Image (cartoon, rainbow, N blue to C red; front, side):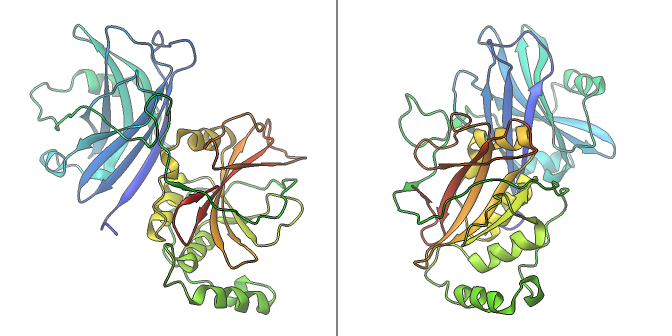
Length: 355
């Protein structure tokens, strides 16, 4: 595991009008930081082409002063996730900045010495847009040292002609899952710092026999890609236990998640390295319905899976992976326009998405 690894997400929304290609423009930006550097990945849609150069900036805070740093140009004609935009550790040191001091992201449109901000995002809910941010970007010194800005390195799996999102490695495997139906809504937990303890205490289970059974199943994990014991402990200690389906499904344990960065770090610490959250449709589900599901499934044949549930309106809406997810409808939900979840299964033995 890389020391000091951290990940942040933000959904960029329209700020300056006039750049729409028909639908409302939006973008998803993900920041990975380690060893003092930052690498950004971005998925943009709905921005029109033209005589504009689109440029991504990160805005940091230092002693209550905003410092914009240029990441690089963004190719809006590409429909997938773009990566390879970096701020080197030396650049941050030269500006007396740390990776965790990033506060905003701005995608600018530049033409003939003019600059607009079609898309903007805040990484902190307590900090919103104000015009002083625009002035900071516009007045940033041209002589200020800029990071290296290579052309975007497009990450994809599959055909370049029709692939719109990153597709993690997918393995065909039969998952013996019981039927799912009917959701029970509850309150969304508030984001918080990670509880790094993965210990599961006996009084967390009732009755005692259930605890002993789960403890036995976790004892031998030497041949597995992921540490299910650590994963289960971190999920239990950081998220609220949830019962999304009115009829209890044997073998499942569910948690309701509203902090995607925290969940991503927990997955990383537990050995789950499938780039699920590079898929923008998972972020769309979180943005629209304020949560996703994270869960564990233990099959009757001893198989074990990590499961992500992506909320959607219906089985024709926001399907994250074409052939590697299954629709689980719900009824009587208090969440408006939500008809169920797309379930994505990751084998804890192979570490791959299964069909």
